[in-house]
Image (cartoon, rainbow, N blue to C red):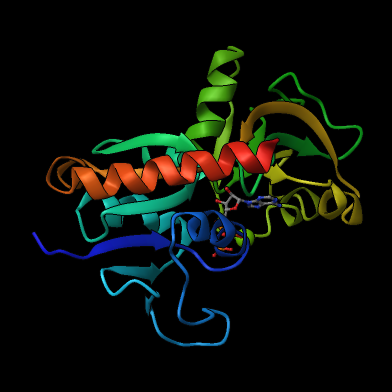
Length: 217
Ligand code: ATP
Ligand code: MG
């Protein structure tokens, strides 16, 4: 195993909110991923690299050991299944809620007149689990983005999506209807790296834990 620690994360809100925490662990990115096209970023520490990837790809890179560590939303981890990784720390960043939403007059009983309700979502596993727990048989329609559009054009009766302020729903005439779970980003660790690079991984983990506690105080 190499001497380098590789951390996988996505640009945007996770990168922006993770940087102050990583700084507490002595890690500063040499470049801004919004300005650079590089996918592997150096840091001030020659033994630490950041790989910038799609949020939903982070668990895969960490599971296969292409990155030793990663930062991923709980939504992404729930969809991935979280097999093959450790999830030792809630970083408390990129907070939002997973919710069922729809038009204000939408029914929540799982049925319309003569068919099962259709639920459009990027979060198929979470949606399946939520409706199954309520004993409702629904039809899940997998989408990759802009879930808010689905009820407006008759693709679905409801959506399952992440909600922060609710402004995106509101702008599209939708309302949050049911709370599924709270979401925040987690530190994930490759299982082999946890053993083979134990001292460095735990040193970073404890620095991050300290920074999270301080940020929460
Ligand atoms: P992409 O935008 O590339 O399709 P994505 O939507 O998963 O992928 P981001 O928008 O960067 O990527 O979101 C990354 C993570 O931030 C999500 O997995 C989720 O945990 C969290 N997140 C998403 N939307 C919000 C939101 N509105 N408020 C707070 N956190 C959010
Ligand atoms: Mg997004």
